[in-house]
Length: 205
Image (cartoon, rainbow, N blue to C red; front, side, top):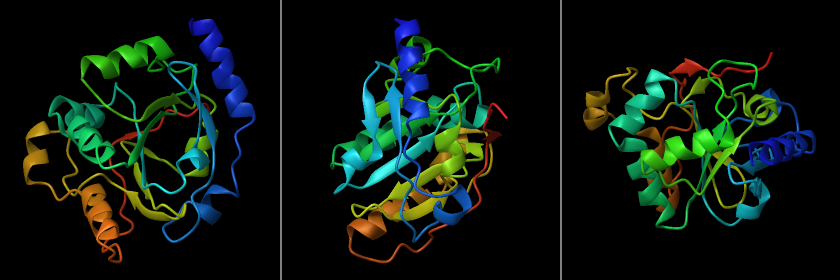
């Protein structure tokens, strides 16, 4: 199972359609770079498939204490369930290189998410880092919000509590929620860009 899925992951990475260089595109107000990845079950997932919906991108690494903060508190799962229930696509991406000790095989990553009762629309691996670099994803979690026209409207931290303490979730201002609420109400997003916090993305290079 892992072998077949890994081959699909590599092929998907080889044929990823990334519009322009990261620093030219992955910034609020610009078109979100398109991509194609394979999820942990071996299914092909393309960003363009979700045109017409709001999309959240979540960079993930289960070994990162900052990711653990949001999953151990139940915060990330609650956000996934809240927004997928209103037709938002939530795409969770792990760009950890296969050569890194924190890399998880597709089945292992799927099991981790299932144990935590996570509910992303898709859970995908980006082992060659092409998608992560296209978005200039630097941390886990690094969050992005894309509007139904395919425009990036938020990029940065999940919230304003730059700690790994799960207790801080309760008093944090969540930037992803704020961006989605603003956009869905027809308003200009109040905060479109912040500096992400967390662990560094474990890229191959």
